[in-house]
Image (tube, rainbow, N blue to C red; front, side, top):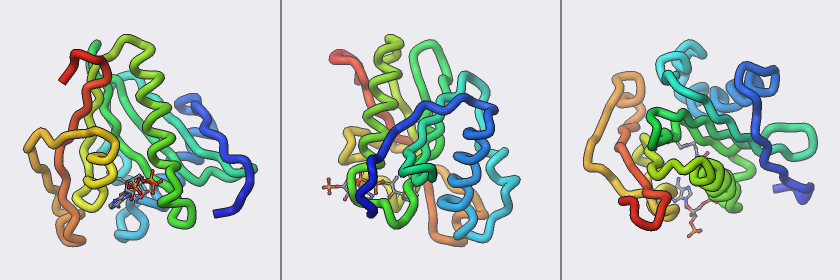
Length: 158
Ligand SMILES: CC(C)(COP(=O)(O)OP(=O)(O)OC[C@H]1O[C@@H](n2cnc3c(N)ncnc32)[C@H](O)[C@@H]1OP(=O)(O)O)[C@@H](O)C(=O)NCCC(=O)NCCS
């Protein structure tokens, strides 16, 4: 990783910056599997969208997209760090920023749908499996399955 100052930014949904984060998410999560850009639409949710991004100089190198799914919960829908910036704590930093914002809104629950390969990342960050597994044919052929995970953000939440 380069040694420039790394910044986490909150991105305005529907903006040009948001489009760039979408592009990065596609490059990290779906392009390597040979999936089309349209697949991104399959994963959109209704609800307030929260976008965070990591910028190094003028380039986005990581992104996170979450939605408020109820008055008491958010769902982390996508998280990705560019390959050459991984394993330096940036994914964790972005997650902690999301948790801080969500908690400050009085919201107690964070859900995520984790790829099997990234499950250890979520577990290290305090998520637990709900035991509900999901699959999608386009991902199964790459041996990618999903598990629903959750984290309580308040002292008395699960
Ligand atoms: C998953 C991802 C966002 C993690 O970001 P990151 O910046 O590399 O993670 P961090 O450096 O903050 O890692 C935090 C901890 O999780 C662990 N971890 C991270 N990714 C992991 C993985 N794929 N498998 C096992 N452990 C992992 C790290 O080893 C680290 O543990 P440590 O503190 O004991 O060293 C990143 O690896 C990524 O973009 N992966 C590809 C896309 C993806 O799978 N996204 C998730 C889809 S649900």
